Length: 194
Ligand SMILES: Cc1cn([C@H]2C[C@H](O)[C@@H](COP(=O)(O)OP(=O)(O)OP(=O)(O)O)O2)c(=O)[nH]c1=O
Image 1 (spheres, rainbow, N blue to C red):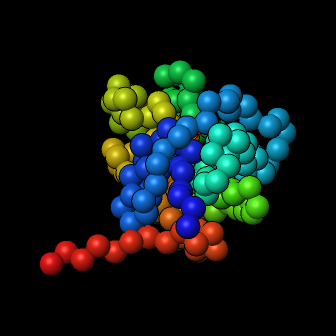
Image 2: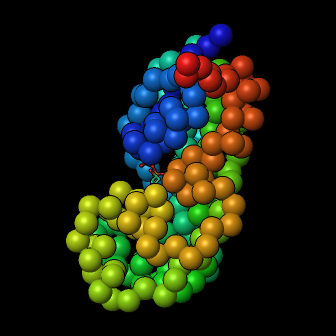
């Protein structure tokens, strides 16, 4: 059976995969994350996931390589990670009181078989007051996250409703992914606790 490699520097992805019971090693892709201009979010996340998986598979051709990419979309406009505090502020103000979509694209590659898919989750934010946004921007939380918030952290204060897979918002649609990994003979283990 081939070993699983997670091609990601995201600590959230590692944590989710590990908690689901998978054994894997982490080897991150080094190439630039350039957004394919003009593409729809579902295309963009799948393309970036594919690129990261391809890069790492070149170095580990006998492994099963998993890569992912997460972006959010508001009114058809893609919002990735913030480039500055002002950018994060603008994003959170735009998300306030509205529903946006979170897309995660995932690629599972071996040299013989390649599978790419995406999962969409809708997130509705409550109306956010300026003080709350200001306090949040003073923390480290928004800056390495798509959409400038972490649903699993203090960003929970913003979230009114989630429709779809919560874990997809954190960066990995674990359940859908597990069905895909099974096709590559990668299954989680369930260690007994007695
Ligand atoms: C919306 C949202 C995003 N995120 C995270 C998931 C991803 O790690 C990150 C989006 O950036 P990505 O570019 O998808 O991932 P990454 O750069 O962290 O890691 P790599 O490319 O090496 O795989 O935002 C949260 O943790 N919580 C959230 O609520």
